[in-house]
Image 1 (cartoon, rainbow, N blue to C red):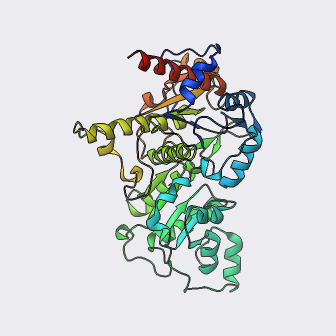
Image 2 (image 1 turned 30 degrees about the vertical axis):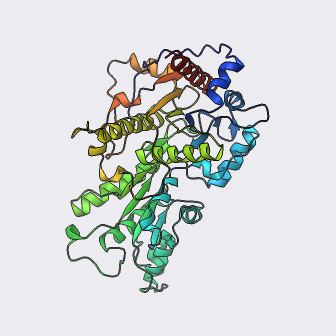
Image 3 (image 1 turned 180 degrees about the vertical axis):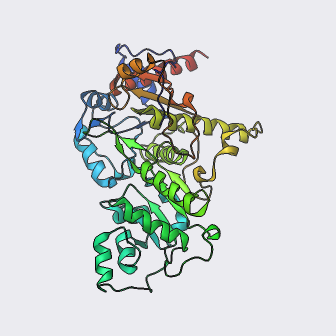
Length: 430
C-alpha cells in the first residue's frame, strides 16, 4: 500500500521488560475480557522458523500446566490449508492449535453461504479446490476444467492454437454454467486465466455465444481474497501478489466493457469482515475456555502497517461507528453508512455477538516494517508517496499509524499485559 512515516502514536504504557508480579498477572488473566490476534509471518516466524521473542511471548500467556490463559487466534493473508498452518504453529510453541483458530485470507468466505451451493469457479494454485470445499463451497470447478470444456477460448496458449488448427479438440457445451467466481489467490499462467475469466464475465458464465452488447452483460458475482499488490520473498525486490492479478483483471474488464468490475465481497486483511470474523473466533475460544466476561477489546499484533495496522484501525473505526449508530448518534459519514458494498459484513450469518468496543493495533519491527529504512525514507524530501492499496479501500495514511510500536512480539505482549494491569488498577480505585 502506501509509504508511511515512523509510527508516533503511543498510549503511554512502557515496554521496558520490567517484571510483572504474579498477583498483577493473575488479576488480568484469571478472567480476561480481551483477546489477542497475531499475524504469523514477520511476527511469530520467518518462513518456517519461529522467532525467539514469539516463543517467549506465547509462554508468557500460559499457566503452569502449559494452557493458554487468554484467547488468541492467528490471522494471515496466506492461503494455506488451515490444518497445515495449525500443525506448524502447534509445533513451534508446543501446544495444541485448532485449525478453526487460524484465519487465512479466504476463511471469512464461510459467511457467504448464499454462494456455497452455486457452481463456483475457484482461482488460485495448490489445494484451491480443497480450500474452497473446506469453506463450504460444494460445487466447484477450476480454470483448467473450463478450458478443457471450451478449448477454443485459450488462444494465448500457442500449443493450444496448434492443437486447434490440427482439429485435435473436443468441446463440451454441456459443461455447467459458472455462477460465481471465488478468487483465493494469484494463479499460474495469468494470461490464460485472464482470458477465460473475461470470457466468463462477458457471457454470464456460459461462453458458447458472444454477447450482443458487452456493455450490458450482468456481471457474475466475484469474491476476492487478499488484495496485497506485492509481497516480500527471497528476491531483492517485492514480488507480485494477488492484488496485482486483480489489477490486471480490473483494467481489462474496464477497457473492454467501459465499466468498473464489481466485487461481491473483498475478504482478507485489511477488510473489516476479516476482523469481524476474528472477533467471532476469539469469542468462541473464550466460551470454550469457560471465561465469563464478554470480550471487550482486541489487540492485533502485526508487522505490516499498511495491511495489519490499517485493518485493525478500520475495524476500530467500524465498531465505534456501530456504537454511535446504536446510540442514535450516527452521521452520514459514519463507517457503517459509508462502506463500499464489497466490504459490507453480512448481517444474516451466525456469528457470536459483536461485543468488542475497541481494537488496538501493535506494530512490531521483525517483519515488513523496518524502522531504519523508514527513517531514511523520511529524510528524502523529494520522495512522493505512492498508494498501493486496492481501489475499494480509500487512501487514508493515518490509519497506518499503530496504537503502539514495539521491537518484537514479546514486547508487544508485555505492553498489553501492562496496559491491562493499569486499567484493572484504575477500575479498582474507582
